[in-house]
Image 1 (cartoon, rainbow, N blue to C red):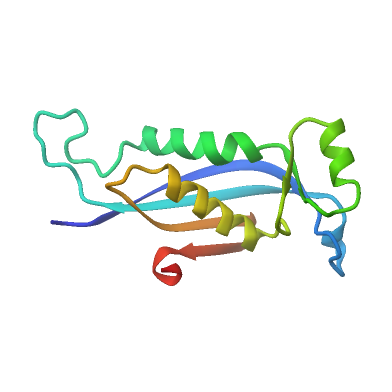
Image 2 (image 1 turned 90 degrees about the horizontal axis):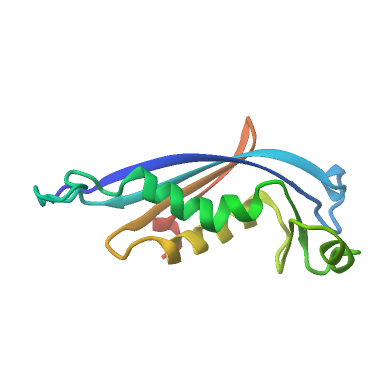
Length: 147
């Protein structure tokens, strides 16, 4: 059986602040995130099925990632739960995501991988997640590195 990798790109806008950081990123600032999600699987061979020859219909992958990641984080302010005023800001404004972790690109990609792994169909594997924070800076998560 031939294993293939399928990848879909997603884009969303977000802002964050890194509590206790010693540089400019301690201030609230925004990013145009680019997220690449790669799944691994075998194309279906059932000739009578509408999805014959597909690992996953790209529209199904889009639905999963939009529901669990993009719809949650797009145009959101992401703050660590113990950041100053995080509780007050999240109670006052909509679209504030409060996390138990520092919302770095590294921690976001780990979190996104965990969420996506739980949401994909059981016949597929999450191969990798790549998150661009700027056009020239990104973090990658690979399943093989995290078993």
